[in-house]
Length: 238
Image 1 (cartoon, helix red, strand yellow):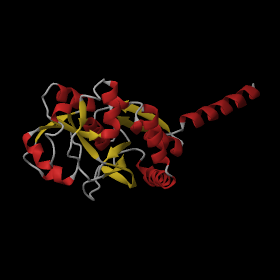
Image 2 (image 1 turned 60 degrees about the vertical axis):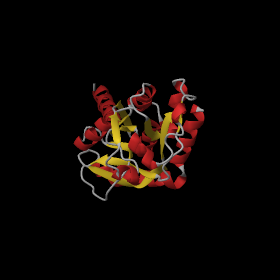
Image 3 (image 1 turned 120 degrees about the horizontal axis):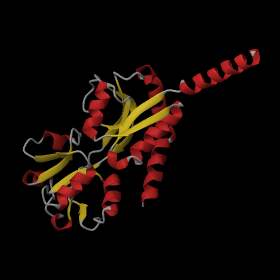
Image 4 (image 1 turned 135 degrees about the horizontal axis):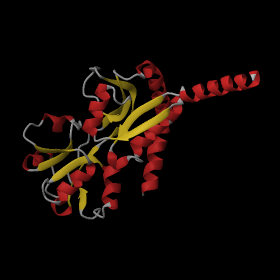
């Protein structure tokens, strides 16, 4: 009987050890549950020796969930000020990307300068930040949507004249939708690159691990881990 009691204690301790492993709650676009952002998050969770609970949400909902502490961390966030409130930006940035304007092929010459955007309806992601000259313009007709697929669909229906997104994710999706010859990069393109950060919620129960997350990110940047993940991801999609 005593032997059984000892076994029960051992198994209980083992079970407690398994259950004690922390879980990172995060989210990515519903279109890219197996996409690049998901792979970045999987890398971070692995380095932290934690489990990853990933849920699909559009960008605007992700920001709200992060603000409320419903998710713990988020990738793909740009920083437009030094202010740190509900969003804590973990340095250094893990990558730099440049946004790209896309148009229907027949309109490729129509967008040749920033000023041309004043005569066009522009598809953007709700709450996304782009580049300074674009952000400062108040006379652009912006159409906010939640997903890249919606931008492409609106463009094909003629409800917008152009949209802005990363070419690294846009080109594979256009190919998948059979539109790579119909939707092309515009003549005008911004030259500015944005820094993208891993962001932790000030209301996250994992906030006490903020410095550890920052160490993992810094190590990933220093060793080129994020670059290798990105290169491997896009090689698979080619």
